Image 1 (cartoon, rainbow, N blue to C red):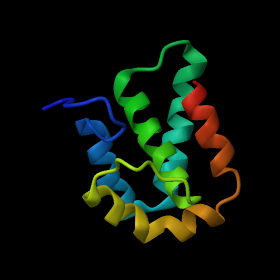
Image 2: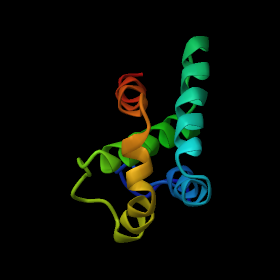
Image 3: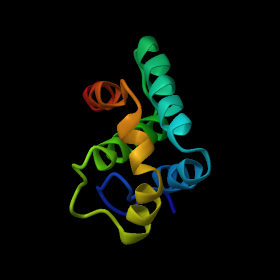
Length: 102
């Protein structure tokens, strides 16, 4: 389907990433930021990588108690499962901010 809206989770890449996050937890979020950083060094970030990084940033915001109000309930249920682990991971907040600014 591709994308169906403008929200961070309104595309296939982000929704697939939520499934990866459900299975892999914090490590998947860290990897998403690393992938974004690697692509940013080339001067070009492709759409799937950007969508995944924005979803990862939303996951971090949720874990630190600043979730978007319009997150789908199905996404919130997954994010709640790992929220404590996200908040305990040092450096994720800064990585999320850097990802959004990229």
